[in-house]
Image (cartoon, rainbow, N blue to C red):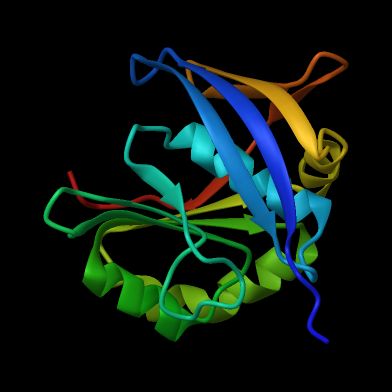
Length: 183
């Protein structure tokens, strides 16, 4: 018998002073049986970083044709495609052809360096691609915020990001490995 996803609920309040976006989001997060708390919380962080009324979680790890998070316009055109982890270069190139903006949030330290050194030359021509690294310590701290029912606050100001619950706050430091060339 196949294992079912664990359903987590989150109330997410976003105060993004850099984009002048302020909103409350009631999220239902399906956590795949093979997904860790850390990866799930990175998905929640990515949602907060790109928050909008039309942003949505994809089908998850089992769907090859959908990202972790995406935003579509009213015509169904993909505006934003967000991947967590170290996706295959072919998958990223395909996403760059389908979406206006593609963001990859790679998690970890040495493993990300190895992945990026192998993928970089192949992805340099993708003008609409942004790749960021989240350090392993940060990802681990995000995982500690995980619960089946969560109330989270995300504050973004001057490029600094904090994700917190009632007990603790995590400052998220990311390193830009590649910035989009698209204006």
